[in-house]
Every structure is written in C-alpha cells, then in structure tokens.
Amino acid sequence: MNSFITEPERKIPIKEEYDVIVSGGGIAGVSAALAAQRAGAKTLLIEKEYSLGGLATLGLVTIYLPICDGFGRQVCFGIAEELLRLSVRHGAADKFPELWLTKHSAEERASGERFEVQYDANVFAILCEQLLRAEGVRLLYGTTVCGADVRDGRINALIVENKSGRYGIGVKSAVDATGDADICKISGENTSLYARQNVLAAWYYCAENGMNNLNMHGFAENPDEEAVNARLLTQRRFQGINADEISEMVQLSHDEILKDFLKKGGVSPEHSLSSIAAIPQLRMTRRIAGVCELTTENEGKRIETSIGVIPNWKKRGPLYEVPFESLYGEKIKNLCAAGRCISVSENMWDVSRVIPCCAVTGEAAGTAAAISDSFSELDVGVLCKKLEKNGVMLHI
Image (cartoon, rainbow, N blue to C red; front, side, top):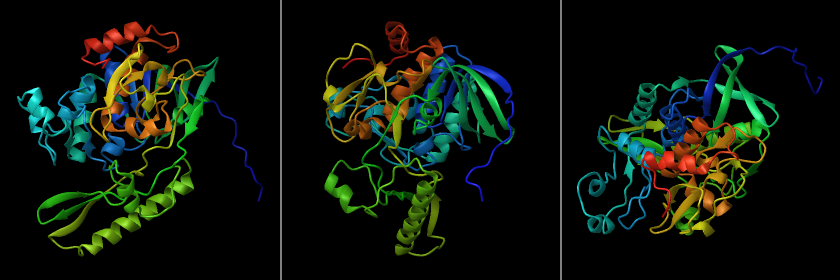
C-alpha cells in the first residue's frame, strides 16, 4: 500500500460571512459570543458537540469556582457573574453561596464561604443556549473547523465540516475558544504545549438513595500536591492533542469509572451510574504563544492593558490582572484566544483555566473582536471603556 493518497482538487464554496466567529462552545466561547453580539457584531458560535459548556457541562467539571478573592471581595463581574447566577437560576446542586446571593456585609462574607457554586450541568447547558439565542447569536452544532484561508497574516475564512459537507465561512475576526488552541494551530499562529501534561480523570455522577452525587474520581480540584498524587489512577500523563492518545485515555477513564462505581454496589433502583463525561476530561493541552504571558509573578501588580481581574481558586488572596496582549499572537492579526488557551506561564495555566477566568477572558476577546480586526493595532483604551461599561473590574 502507498504511504499517501491524493484527494482530488476541489473548490470550497464560502456559504456565509460573519463579523465574528467564535470556535468552541465552552464557557469562554459562550462568553465571547455573547459579548461580541452585544457589542453589535454579527456573531457565529461553532461547536463540535451538540451542547454548550464544554468541560463545565459535558466534561462534568460542574463547580463554578470562586469569583471572589476569598476575603469577602468580589473581583469577577460582567459575564462571569452573569453566568454564575444563570447556572443556579433554578436551584443549586451544592455549595449554594447564600452569603453572596442574598444581602450580607463584606465582613460576613469574608468570614464565610467563597462566591462559588455547584450546578446542574444539563440545566446550565440549556440555559446558556437559550441566552445566546435570545441575544441573536447563531449556533452551529456538530461542526469542526478543519482549515483556514490565511492571506497576509489574516484569516479570511474558516473551513468547516459537518452534515452539510465541507465549506467556508468568511470572517472579519475570529476567537479561538477551543481550549486546545486548534484555530491558532490551523492558521499558523505560534502555540505552546503544556509540559507536565494531564493526569487521568474519571469524574462521574452516581444516583444513590435519591441523591445524584458528583464523584471526583482520580484527579480532583485540590491545591495540595501530595493529595493529588495520592489520588492518581495511573502514573501516565496525557498531552491531549493526539487522537489515538485521547481515545486510549477516554477508555481508561471509562474503565476506572465502572470499577469505582461497582465497588460501591451494582445497579439497582437505589444505585445507578447516572452520568459520565461526554468529552475527554483534559484541562491543559495547547495554548497560544502570545505577545506576552500572564505569570504568577504578576500577582497583585497593575497592568495598564488589563482586560479583567481573576482570582486564584487554589488559595485565598492572590489576584491577577490579565494583559490584553496575552490574548493574541504575532502572526495572525485578526485572531485572539480565550479561556484555557490564552498565553500564560506553566504555573499560571492551572489558575487561569477555570470557569470564572474563562468567562473574563472570553468577554474581553469577544468585545475586542467586535470592535477590531487587527488586535495589535486596537486601541486598548477603547476596549477597556467598553468592558468597564459592562461592569468588568479591570484593576485590583
């Protein structure tokens, strides 16, 4: 057999055009699409699955981590707060932040719980979809971006494949919210890989005696490194950008879920495996190598081009201003990143990848994409004024 095959040359039609295309329907993508549409841009959100939320819903990482500093001060506002409140519109699954969602003083909040919540994944996914539809964002499910028409350092169109075939969609500005910097890679922008790679996660929901419990089997959100290591299901780590590797990882995860579930009893009316992740539970894979990196050394420092403040979910206190330059690179003028694939240092990646931070960078990316098609030339002051008008806190 020959090592290569040749596809026949074909012309790909450009079926439609948008001001902003957001690729990836996780929290960053939802936030970016919402912000872009609200800023007046004709916006398309492309998602390869058939539900929104990404890891936050399909991946069963159903904890909306803190939007406060841990000492009674809220720091994430705008869409980050809007989505948290949306997630519990019809009630919380756990960790209901009563001190924050009802009237209490800053002193009471400082001595109690952080502003976080555990929500119902399916309800949240549908509410996000309804919110985007109400705002006028067009959603395109079951669609993969498989190429880009790049000329003179600009994406002119994204090439997609879905049930309708293969075709192009023209775009003025694009937002990569894939979580894996897929659009950056496809278009030729500089990217970097997460050196430590990902440990195996096997989170699942189990219905037990009338309760639907989240089992954080394997990797858990725990700042204690020894505690994390003690819960490793395997010493093997996964980069998360190779199809064979990801497929094997998902199968290992399924094996671990079933084994852990059966340890606690077989299937019965009082005990059932109610939900497993529909996508790989990968946290950090590939990111844009931006004009600058957000690092832990930026803790507490003022950044003049800040597009929002994010907290540290691992511990109380640390705050970081996110530079706009960490959202775009040096090669593709009209492409920026949002969510867990922005430009950050290795030790900052695990801080910035979580839901509130994804919402903050998503809102900034979507707003920027709506007002400019060349991010290095954008007047950051104009962007910041728009973000502040929408309630975003820019400086510590």
